[in-house]
Length: 223
Image (cartoon, rainbow, N blue to C red; front, side):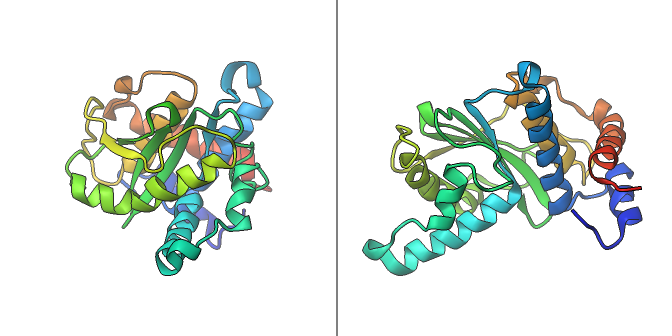
């Protein structure tokens, strides 16, 4: 990935309370997927899929197609590429997938959604518990709730036609504006390897910012 102002891009990762952009989040997801490929015994599970914020954007577009075409709508071939693992920002096919992790970015605010197919439910992990109301979440996540089950059916995943939306309320609330992106990245990192996210709190955020900047530089920078 190429960024127009690499110095500022890395400064935004390092700076306390600085908002992370879509490309920060998506490259962090790529970093987690790459780590799982390199160290599968510790970090990979064939039943857990990490997607990117880009996936939310393409699902939104697909949902608009569904609304406009109604009964004539057919899932596009491009969406099926995500299901069979051809999209680089998916990395693996959905076959046997039980859990899916997707960062969602709305007006610079970032949170995580975890889809558990056995529950037919989207679980929302948001470090700012008061930023979005339940009705706002349902409106934002409506495309995922409708389109993902259509996609999952092509991977022979048994799931309801529509996903329920449930907000997690046990996580520690962030204390500073702008840290939501780091919280979301850590939620995905922890949940994708079966760790408890309730231990994630503000005291470690600055350290994790520095670690993320170092990891991203090592992974993506050509000196």
